[in-house]
Length: 163
Image (cartoon, rainbow, N blue to C red; front, top):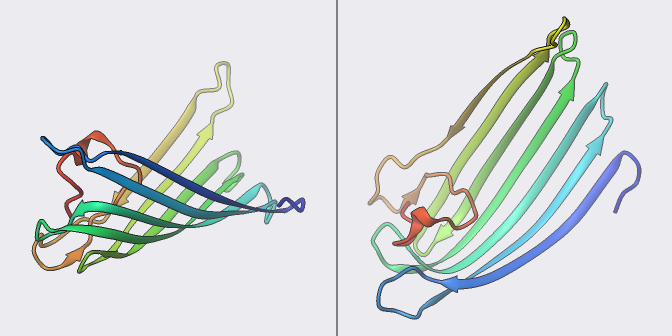
């Protein structure tokens, strides 16, 4: 749905694949349910994009190495704009994850902050700086997952997701 200044869209994605376990034919199933929004032109050259995702996955290992079901909710917001100071532009994104992996509770977060400027001159160089942060897990056996999860499966989780 697009109403000029306001946008909203839904998304469902599901896939299956190998569980990356030697000597097994086990498969994992991942379901993503998401809703994405956008508020354009909220201020001078400002865009705000909130989103929420619900991720379900089977066959992951929790902190006690027990094969478990993941039930993870994600909420975040992305804000980008121009002309904060002169000709500069900026962007930030904050995201929070919560839910469970079997008996383990999930609570994590991440953020991205950036600012840049295109300098006026003969070659118009661009100067940009950014900072990224994601939470981590303080104790791998406390039943509490604090490591931020990048949502999509990659090769570094070959033995299951460890929180």
